[in-house]
Image (cartoon, rainbow, N blue to C red; front, side):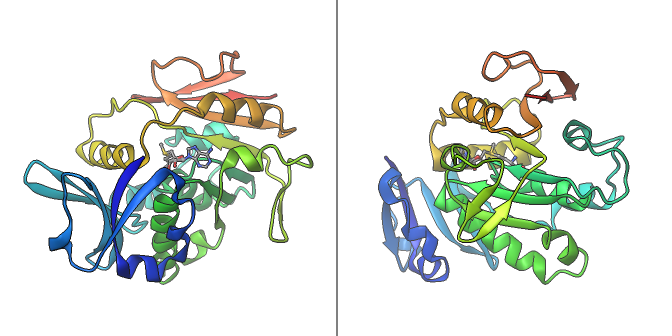
Length: 267
Ligand SMILES: C[S@@+](CC[C@H](N)C(=O)[O-])C[C@H]1O[C@@H](n2cnc3c(N)ncnc32)[C@H](O)[C@@H]1O
């Protein structure tokens, strides 16, 4: 059970936070001074106008949010080229022209990979199981809709707060169906959490908070099994550069970068 302190304002703004309580013990506060940081190491609050997760780094609080108009996301959005983006190659994007591929990102996280794929013209459905991450994503998407440079890209991204394991066992897959919504992906993309080896301070911070907020995730093997059995034509899995292959099967090919690798399967 993970202890999370949540500002009451966040619960009002994102009712989905009240779902899936079984993995969390929540303390709802109206003043941060009332939070016992020892027992509640992860705090959700609005910080600088953005829904954020925070934890202490020594005596200093650190924060993460979903901001598609900041940092690495902006650079990747503005300088994108299939040549430089290994993920684009792995999903089968052939040129910098709008791609139109339909991608199911079954482990959305901070939505960065989804944003990149949408910026290449892909239609992306993001699945996110954690209510904390789903709320962060919704907040980020909402703000991005008001940004001139991002508006069109985020129109191609939609989020379902759900467990991908459930979606991937829907009998009639490869259509993702929920509340009348039908989507038949060309590619299923999986990026389950792996031990952090990336040297970038920003990535380290994000992943530390993510790990603290989500705990250990053990469903990577199950996700790839279900994705492979789903009838989809292509499955792409992100792994640490030297990490073991997920699920034990042999990928059809690999796209290898400095710290990460994409294993591509044609089931
Ligand atoms: C490493 S992060 C993904 C990062 C993401 N690729 C990005 O670009 O920001 C993994 C995410 O997958 C989510 N996740 C793990 N298993 C899941 C499942 N079965 N269904 C939906 N989401 C899942 C976790 O909650 C976590 O937010």
